[in-house]
Length: 339
Image (cartoon, rainbow, N blue to C red; front, side, top):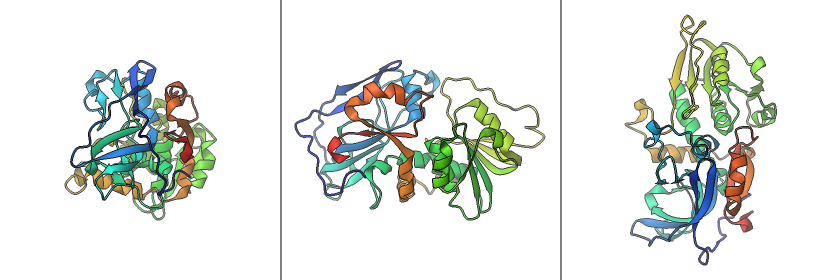
């Protein structure tokens, strides 16, 4: 699966291109200038990039609220919200020039969808041996899951629900399920998620069959009805960790009924920051390196549901970002010979 470590792909005769979101539900590929390699930088030829359906869907539909235009900036974003912007943060490529310790290695970086680019070598994290380049695009999603587990503070033996069987929810369930003694259930309206949950070693239930009296609940569905399901799953005094981001959408919270009498807690989790109790010890790079190590299991390949050639991206992206599409992770393929 993916490219072998000793394969070399030449892009020397091809001008690099990047995906830009240029208007509401409009995107296109544009040629970019090659930057001269500076000391401390590397030149990367992209192999794969991952599409963040949640975040990039909000950008594509023009639903990023003005108040979040600065906080929403990706590390290597170009342009400004609302449009045009070059956006993305899950890039896996091969270093072809620069730091001799990195040349020839497969690296993950928080770079947008672009066929070739330069960036500081310190911003590249080598992909560990045994992890395919395609699977490595999940690192950004795994970071989100890891951060949420820090915020939720699960314990061995906990009964845990994850409401929302998208890629972030499934990764959250997968990691929580590796804690000794836990019993983890993924809740989703799509029954086809059951087979994937089972492969990941966790249980599955439709919302009407969701377990109750859980010790910890994560919500990832980005749907207010899912949040109501999460509250109904929670046991007395339980934390519900809200991982969804709704953009400019108003959300009705079910804070009546027994929310107060059962002393439920609604906890926010956002990957843009490290929880306060870890900030003195953890850096973003340490978190990303850890997320990559959590991708060793080949079963996680099942989370890559769609592959799209880079030159087809503007045509296929509207369908991939459609909320009704049955997509987990869509991987952009930059060189068809690597398939």
